[in-house]
Length: 292
Image 1 (tube, rainbow, N blue to C red):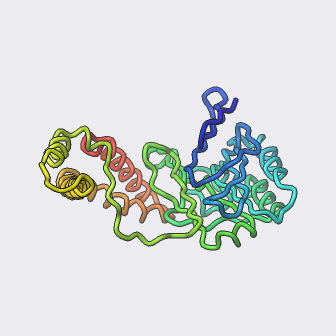
Image 2: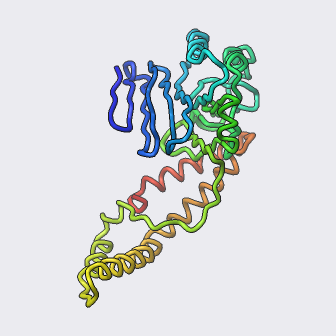
Image 3: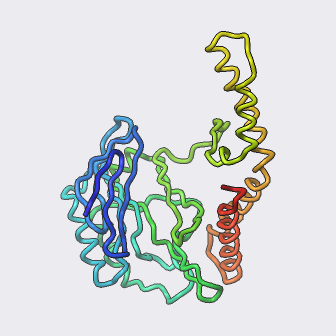
């Protein structure tokens, strides 16, 4: 069963397994061409630019189903000279460097993946930020880390987005690590815009601060009064939030930076234990009342 809503498309899970969900913002135009329990195949246009095929996958984990999946994926495009990008969980380790712990790497198990890339003339997009994208989250000695989530693209797609890079983020409350595909490459961060955080409204101090500023009488015209109060409220909220939550944000950033160092791998047993503890510490911090 599938369900389509504005800027969203869902494929229901089979029993308690699987399930796919796709969301997009207003500047992105997406038309769904095909879907099943393992993929959503689409045509994408961003801000009116050239269209390209985007396929979002959740490959089967069972060996007996892998050949059928990769052959089916290859049949989606008859012509190899297309702009095509595939992103998602391949459920496959394709080299020894993509695996830590568990049984030794099996070269034979990755054959369907390599044959698909060769037949479809696709290549993996460079990734940055870590080596592994999944962990069984077991204790030391039993932990397994693997790079299961990947981004693949055709040569024509690479010509369209020559700076594209896949950014491996920090996992929180999941055994998988999010992957962010940056079509225009890494953008240097500048001054951040002010954004009101919804959790602030749960704090009485925040509500009092806003009421105090907006109840202040002004002698300016309506438009000038609104802009002035808005600017002053923004400054006060910014200062208040740094005093109220700044310490936790600094701590979280420090943990994230440490995790990124370990994610670059490869890991030994000692590093794997430290990485596991850092992830647990970060999850606990984000789930605490002060952070939310």
